[in-house]
Image 1 (cartoon, helix red, strand yellow):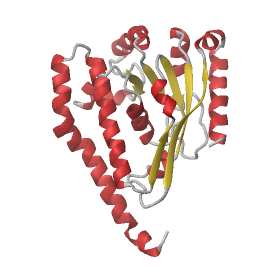
Image 2 (tube, one colour):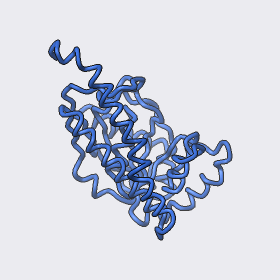
Image 3 (cartoon, rainbow, N blue to C red):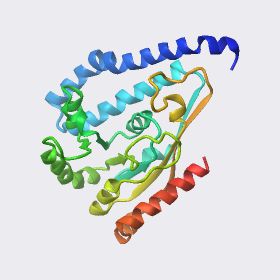
Image 4 (tube, one colour):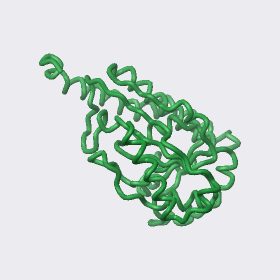
Amino acid sequence: MSRFVRFFKPMVDAGVTLVLWGYFIFGFLFLFSPVYLWAWCFALDRSRAFQRLNHLFFRSFVRLLHFFVPGLKIRLDKSLSDLGRCVVVANHRSYLDPVLLTAAFEKHSTIVKSAFFRTPVFGRVIRTAGYIPSDAANGLSDLLISRMQQFPAFFQKGGVLFIFPEGTRSRTGLLGDFNPGAFKIARRFEVPVEVLCVTGTDRLFAPGRFLFHTCIENLITIRRAGAIPADQVRQLSLKELMQKSREIMEAGLSDS
């Protein structure tokens, strides 16, 4: 990186960050909120409509990333669009990871921190979209039970439930311990487990850093590392299923 670029980089990082977070706030308020309101009032399937709107909202964000960070390349496995009726597990390196997966899957659900369900506007959006609270505390037990009851229909319609089994972002790039939630759901509803590997998101938006890291060459990839078919999911114990998924993910990351 040249001395000229190093001098201006903090200002560019700040400017791009303001634009992108401005999109989150004002793009939602002035561009998308009227459409969400229309869907709330008139959509025959509110959850499906809100999932699609979230998908479009984050796809627009990814396009902005491409435009304002010229050195950035994003490569998504082309076969991601073929996924449906499955639980997707992926490693977690940045807050950008759920953004990219929401942009990748139109019919989707995911687990969101329970605190977000109590926020005035965002909480209503994720409730209506059929997202799942991370725990049953603070009056969310009925919602959690309701989500479990809706899973058969969700998977039957080709839905993708994506979860980061580490539960939090890795600050070293190494895989943390897996939580069992995603694998319990896959076993209970007898659906395949698809394992994805995410790389490069932490270089653009690192844990603990508010500003996007621009003015650098960066490649973000999301690719399918392997799958565990539904019949194997039924046969494996919970511990075996978690271990097999971890082995697939570790092998995929080592090849990245």
